[in-house]
Length: 152
Image 1 (cartoon, rainbow, N blue to C red):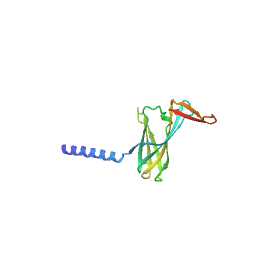
Image 2 (image 1 turned 90 degrees about the vertical axis):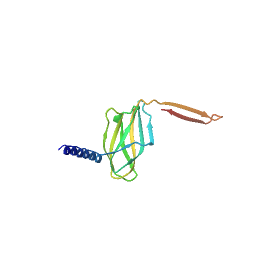
Image 3 (image 1 turned 45 degrees about the vertical axis):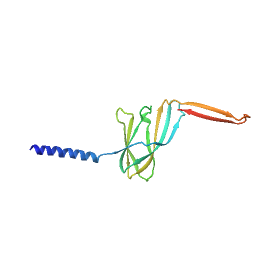
Image 4 (image 1 turned 30 degrees about the horizontal axis):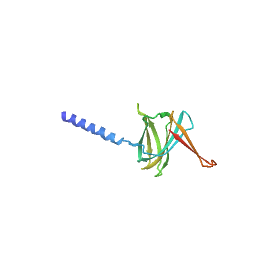
């Protein structure tokens, strides 16, 4: 009787482990930015749009995005798939915010393996910026070259 209970517990444990492996979702951390646009027109809020190439596998993929030590407004974050290399059909299934973390995870489905160009847009509060101008003229002072530098 004791052996049957032990075998039953082992069999039950194996069933739990095997069912968890079938439900696994592939996690993708965001790769290096391919393109970044920063809109500095507003004094209090700065809009940032960045593009990245993300590898997707067929099925469900979890894409992780975190922003430690940055004053990103989480409610402004927008994730869009703008191009897929393999002509794959992609859908954003859900977004979740892990508790007590400056991060979120998108669940994205893809009908085949391949990479996708994604655009992530978000707003940052109170980004400090300084503008510097340097003007140089020719000897006759008939032409001037004006350069603008922005320190962010």
